[in-house]
Image (cartoon, rainbow, N blue to C red):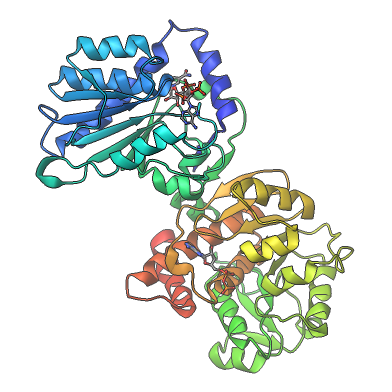
Length: 483
Ligand SMILES: NC(=O)C1=CN([C@@H]2O[C@H](COP(=O)(O)OP(=O)(O)OC[C@H]3O[C@@H](n4cnc5c(N)ncnc54)[C@H](OP(=O)(O)O)[C@@H]3O)[C@@H](O)[C@H]2O)[C@@H](O)CC1
Ligand SMILES: Nc1ncnc2c1ncn2[C@@H]1O[C@H](COP(=O)(O)OP(=O)(O)O)[C@@H](O)[C@H]1O
């Protein structure tokens, strides 16, 4: 698992560590790590000696890091030039170090560069990049180096222009090949469009660890987490002890949603899948192992319900929603079931002790919350989670999962291939199976999103992806993941 901290928490940690160290120590550690990474990158493009390096230097400590790293590269023979965005306000000691090492300042962008180091702003930025900085970022993105190859871009701490705490990119911003960050990850490294701007993220240890006393703002699962959480059958398991998931999905208008949620559920860890709804004949024809009924009331015992994918919005859909919410079981509400909550008709039904998981896309989120998720998707998901007392999985290219207590996870495996009709139905079935197998709701949501994302990537290797392809890819992905 990777963890990311908010700017205010990073600032407090820095302050407490710096109190016990000579001034500038953290910056020296940061700059040394930055220079090392830059040198490694240059090694891959013809070496450090003679390489043309352009530093984009803002007025704060982020610019200071870039200047000291530039000095280290200049000492190894690189031709380092610093473009100072505000020459009247620059990290003076950093600039002196660069000059002493043989580096220069420049007023204009040079015609060629092998490497651009973005030290315009780091975690001290507020708002989108100002016009002068934005113009430099635009031009620097066009720079070319040896043999006409695009210049490599290394961002210092975060790419300039991203919103560090939310992962939003409000305007012009640097697109980095590598982001070298210090002390800990920040939300922009793992959330939203900012995460994509970071390229590969390299974490340099500057000794902040023990001073990070608050909980992380965002957690990111890795394969080992998912493998550790995923239930496996044991020698004494039977079909009931592995959990039974119930699906109240699909309708005469949308029988496909029933089939797709069933496919997702069948790839999960439960020992049995029950389907209740008007698509029961199609479901059992496609999946003979599924036990079917035509409504929730007749379905038999389950350990968790999935309700809503393709369910429709008529009186029968409302009855089914009421039936699942009346149980004392974990319930996942997707798609139409979320839309049925709008207007408050089910407010009383939502007062339940058992876990609730909501899986909205942006449209469903907006209808239910009364406003779109906006730029701070994690914050928006956490607010809806607190309001509904549910785990909220907000779908998107970086799906986020939030709990009512404000714990936030970002899924790292998303794939644009998943943006295809019905892939959310597959996710709902898989997640429901994990709930029925007894996995705590937040882990079930995080694990389902992770595996679903990998399945999208897997399916995309063989051409254009449809939702059945995503469902079919769940099994090979799970074999890889769980061994
Ligand atoms: N603290 C530590 O211990 C360590 C910190 N470290 C490093 O310091 C960085 C933080 O440095 P920081 O606090 O000086 O802020 P920083 O990101 O350079 O930006 C502030 C400057 O940018 C300007 N500016 C602001 N918004 C802007 C905008 N939208 N568009 C354009 N300009 C804008 C703003 O100008 P002003 O608003 O004052 O006019 C101000 O002058 C951190 O990310 C890491 O790299 C490491 O060395 C490790 C140890
Ligand atoms: N651009 C994208 N990149 C990655 N994943 C995406 C993207 N767009 C959508 N997804 C994922 O695809 C799935 C779509 O679900 P949903 O919108 O409910 O579709 P449907 O209702 O058709 O099943 C979600 O898991 C979502 O996170």
